[in-house]
Length: 267
Ligand SMILES: [Mg+2]
Image 1 (cartoon, rainbow, N blue to C red):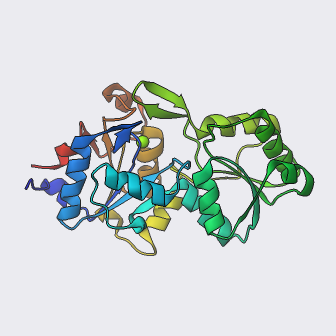
Image 2: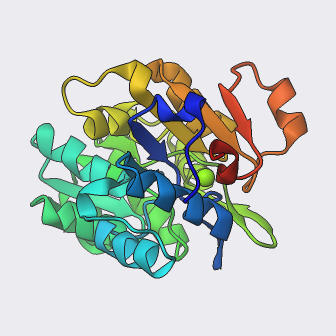
Image 3: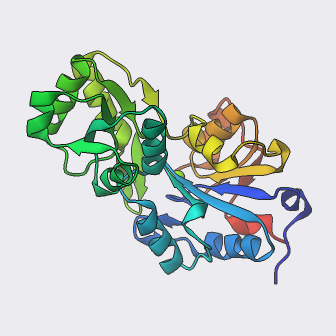
């Protein structure tokens, strides 16, 4: 079995992005998956963390396993949908309107948060509007969200990724929808849960974790690398997703490592 290079063997927790690292659309990135399995086999903790809010953690667990990742349990998956649900529960928010997909709704329901429909949103009002990627976005949904925010509801974004990488190119991400609501309300989100903010990382690390033993791996500078920078941990950009080598030289915060694929971590 391949060995981990010394400079990577000093980490014990690897926080790994999913889109652009494990797969691009429906295409799996085999060399990255094989390399992560070697880390797992050698006793490293590998946590999968994604800003994508469209699926719940169970769906991710199934898909990661189907893709060949030897992931032990759902505890090793953090999504912005799940983190948003925990964030709301912590603040005792119990009634929300959602612009988002079924995975986000199911994570909110699992934390005992009521998700109301468009008709009720216009009538009764909500404490918060939660916005994630919604591939069934309608004008009416934008209208309900904007009205609620204008009436005082908190504006919470699962993430503000501008785009999602697919094999044929990039498509609009949650950030595009958040911008539409910001334009309509004249307000920026009160909270953005996903990367590059550190809320998800705080969840992953629990109370005390030695930061020098954590490596964040991702394919995006403005989320993954920025997130590691914000938290003060090392980072590796992997060139299997949206970032090209040229992009790195222009970006103000440099990743600790640049990897063509995750195989570069192995001897
Ligand atoms: Mg990514």
